Image 1: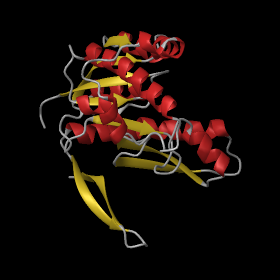
Image 2 (image 1 turned 90 degrees about the vertical axis):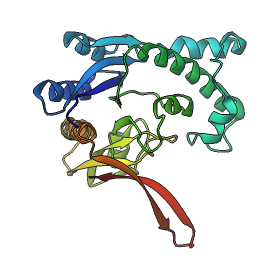
Image 3 (image 1 turned 180 degrees about the vertical axis):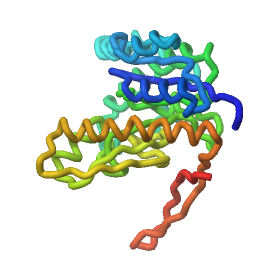
Image 4 (image 1 turned 120 degrees about the horizontal axis):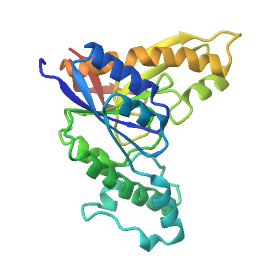
Length: 263
C-alpha cells in the first residue's frame, strides 16, 4: 500500500502513545499521517501535543451529558438514527442481571456523546481510528458507523495487559495485584465487548520481586510505544486480515472467533 493512510486518534489523557505514533509517522516508519486528535476531556494534555504538531484537535465533554440525564432524562435527546433495541442486542459490556435503567442510561448518554464525536470527525475522512488512552467504552452505535465493512475493522486500541487477561481500566494494576510473574500490553481491534476484539500483537515483560506498580507501568509503557506503531504500520501496509476460526470446547460445544492474520 503506497498511499499514505489517514489516521484519527481519540485520547483522554497525556497522549504518550499518540506521541509515539506521531513520531513514527513523521520519521516515515508508518506510511501515514495523523489528521485529528479528539478527546472526551477538554484538558487532555494530548491535545496540546497534537497542536504542537499542527494536528487538528477537538473534544466532546461527556460529563455534562451524563449529569443532565441523571437530573432530567427527557432533557437528553438522541439522534434519529439511534436504535436502543439494536444496541442492546449487540452489546457485551453488561450482563443480563445488570439493572435495566443503568444499562439504558449508559447507552443513551454515550450515544449522545458519540454522535457529537462523529460530527466532529466528519470533515476529516480517515482510514484508521486509534484509541490512544481513550477511557470510554465505545458502543455498537459508534462502532457500526466507523466499521462499515465488517471484514475490515478500522478501530484499533492498545491495552495495558496481556489480553484476554485483565480487561478494563487498570490492566497493569490488576496484573500487579494478582501476583503475575509476567505482564505486558496488547494491541487489538475493537468489537462490542470490553477489550475483547481480535488481537493484533502483544509484548511481554518479566515481573520480579523488586517490582512495584510504578516500575511495572514503566516497563509496560516502553513496550507500548514500540508495539503500537508496529501494529499501525502493519495496517498501513495492508498486512492485517480478519479470518474466522472455529474452536471446540471440552463440552463439545463449538464457538467461532474472529482473529487477525498477519500477511
